[in-house]
Length: 140
Image (cartoon, rainbow, N blue to C red):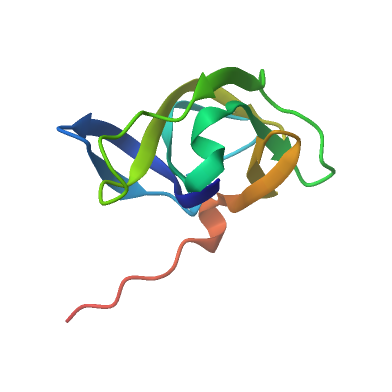
């Protein structure tokens, strides 16, 4: 199994087997810390091949600070790969995880870590940036 896509975003939905992601986030602007972000979403696409389809898997999602400490309750779930009619149809599952009221104690780097069956498959870095570092807008 592998993760094809991982995105911290404003919102995500699945419609007819398609994942729609809105507003990919690489950083949050904050006037001060601690900073609380009211709502964001983590979107993942998981893909299975061959024998992996029949095994039950366990996913674990963590939001970590720069020192590797959890800043929110970790998400864990066991699941099976979706069954498909034949090998021409990809065996994929979308995971959409709403994250409310994330609290960040410091400016700087953070990360979302996705682990499946004890193996880290993706780490997505992002940052909390002070407004003082806001890029200047130049008139066109």
